[in-house]
Image (tube, rainbow, N blue to C red; front, side):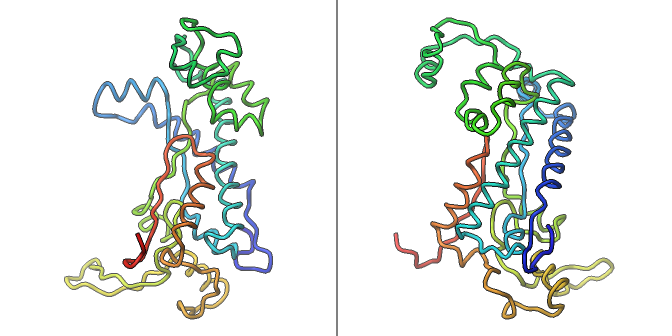
Length: 280
């Protein structure tokens, strides 16, 4: 983030891509130490090496960029965040494959079935028939609808993935991240959500004391606003772009998810808050 809440706040895309690259490589190493309870699970993760690279703090970031959550501008930004995550991730998938080898399932030969031809008509157009053997790396890079949209932006990258294979079969997944956001993220907004509330109080038992103490908890963006703009700011002092979950319409919630999930190749979590009297 550059100049949060300033006249022209900007997001540092170069630093973001570097962070994605670092964490993608870290998650690749996690496969070896995952310690899954069942041998079938361990075989599955070792064969596909899939992981769930994601992000949190979208709502807080939008606020510090002075972009109202759910607005058209926020949808453009959300799409861009997910797109950079995806493209950088697949660049790392190629580099890691060349360094350490592709995911084993992508090395294997897979038999073309009638179902595969129905679901991927391009296979038949390219001359494949039922019973043909095709390497997993070819099926993944050339005949995945998801990778097809990556190829629209990075055709050479996808061509290289078809030749050398990817280190993993799936890269991205957006989790709720509620506990992580509160306990380790200085109360940044969780997942792709807006902040639920910018200021509230929690009853906490402090170390060495037997009674609970009421402690003020503020969102990451309010803490940042107090740091950069107004040290004593409360809810009533905040600009209009400080929105909370209950101020977002269901349509806006869904629109943000649609913008994010376009580049997510695994799963995504989204909470849609609606009032009690919402018409059915």
